[in-house]
Length: 219
Image (cartoon, rainbow, N blue to C red):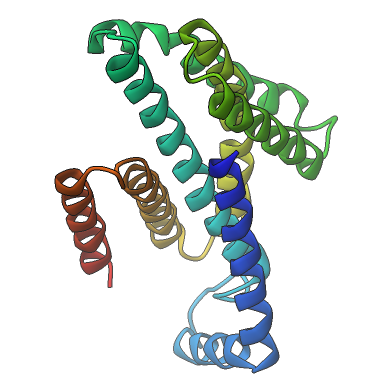
């Protein structure tokens, strides 16, 4: 349950920060500056900073963190607590990968019949179920692997919707928006790895260096 709780805390923190800065007029000033810079150029993607873009990227960071943290936690539990080899752990996680593919196919097939918020809610609910299940089944390998299936399905539902919400208005700056999405994904994966490795000093230092490198490369 800790993984999903951290995801919810992250999203609430982003929401509160966005509303506070919006009330202070920070976003309006930034969007106004951006509009002045692109005056005379074709710009059809709307404001530089909007609620949809902020929450879309935040959702991508959070979902990737949950994915990374869950997979690493399951891998540690199977290898360290149950003596599985790395090869068998990789094979055992294949059903979760298949579930993610099925989730993405469901989004593609149901996108016109079901609204994106409903699909997103289902995906988040599946991630919650997976996180709680992993927390209570670490001592039973079979149940632990079964718990990764709703995680994969949830990821398959959440990622396409979050990505589409981030990229759908990127007609004026498609490359920069795609780059921002990629950075959000990598930061989420790194954050999940950092959380999973927090009990290991050397690994934590290594992941911290990775996060610092990513931040330095894109700032």
